[in-house]
Structures are given as C-alpha cells and as structure tokens.
Image 1: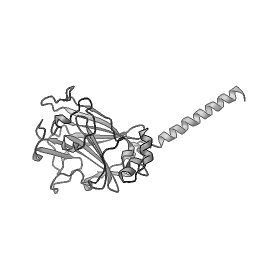
Image 2: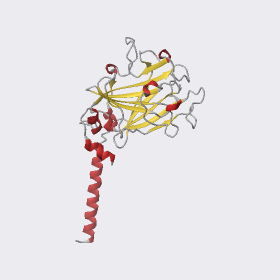
Image 3: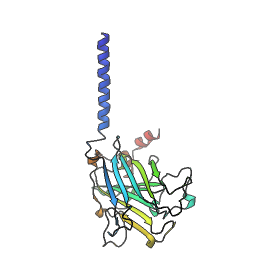
Image 4: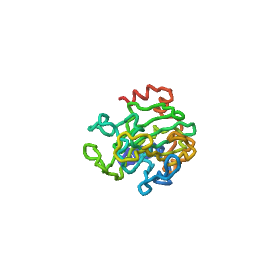
Length: 270
C-alpha cells in the first residue's frame, strides 16, 4: 500500500475514533437552552418575608461538561448554629458530617415522580451531607465509600484556623459537583432551604431562636417547618441545562433501594 494511502487510512481511523469519543461524551450532555438556573430564597418556611431581603440566600444549578450537576450556593454568615469544637477537624474541614441539619446550612432537594429524592446539605465551613431517600423522610443511603463530594468554600468570616471573625456577617459561598448518578431517574421537583440562628454566634440556640427559610414555603397553614414536605416542591426542568435524564437507576441508587450490585463496588474499589 502506498505511503499516501496509509496516511489517509490513519487519518480516517483517528477521525472515526475522535467522533466516537465525542458521541459518547455528548450522550451525557444534551442541547443547552440555558447556562444556569438561579433561585433566590426570599421567604421563611411559613411564607412570611425573610428579615434580610438585601442579602438572601441563593442557589444556582448548572451543568458540567461531563453532564454532572454543579451547585453554587451563597448566604450571609450567622455563625449559628455552629458545630462543637471537638467535631471540627482542622486538617480536613470539608467532610461528610451526619446531623448537619442541626447547624447553619443550605439544603437542596431533587425529587422524581416516585417521591425518590437526593438531598444535599452544605455548610459555611465546607461540611456536607448527601442523602438518598425512597419516599418521605425514608433515608435509603447516607454514606458509602464513593459518596465523597468535593466542596469549595469561600467564607471571608473565617480565619486560617476556621475560627469565626467576631460579628462578621459577610456573604459566604460554596461550590460542589454532584455526580449525575446520585440523582434518581426523572427528576421533576426541586426545593431549597436555609437554616440559621437569629442571633450571631450562638452555638446551640433554642428552637424558637432559629430561622427556617424556604424557596417554596409550606405556607401559614403549617404547624412547624418541614423541609421534606414534598407537596410544596415545584417543577424543575434540568434538560434546559443540557442534562440528560437517566433512564434507569444508577448502581448507587440500586444499592440504596436494596438491589445490591457487588460488581459495581468491586470495580470502584480498584
């Protein structure tokens, strides 16, 4: 075969492989109509107005090039409620913490039409908690070896030792990537919340001294705040971001639902 023919064949094969790689990549990302969905939390859980309308908590949902969900959240810093000192790990501040809902935190929820949902809590100190639920408050999976989510936090109110600067109420922000496998199939509903103390710096405020804010509130007919009140959630369309819905449960969701797949865990442990 002539050298020129060999060169043309090599270029053809390389082009075919590149095209195939792009096809595989694009199957995770569809057509983008919008770059992000931005939400502002302006109400308390009962529908009343928040007391800091100039600096409301915000949540932005966008998509990575690999089809995963990117979350950017921000809120004013209250330093209340905040964790006990013995639970603060200085060399590893950004970590999974069970019970994070008791602290100052922003929560986001992605729900499907079967009331299965993924919730993610992010704190101003970089701690997080991801949970999968198979129905109202039915936790299916809280933590697994692969359930590590990188969180980047910018908090001008914390010094290098993560100690709070007295009285600082500046805006903190956090960014994280949620693997698409953590979301259930056919996500249709969404809500977001922000919890903080009424008085700056109080580590363990009484329940009456806490504020619960919601993107989609329960309304004045509710007797107490319930962030899992799914009937108040409203529609979200992730496909406008280019998100491609998963047609079946991911291996981690199958595990959460009791359909154990040992092959998945062994492969990811290598």
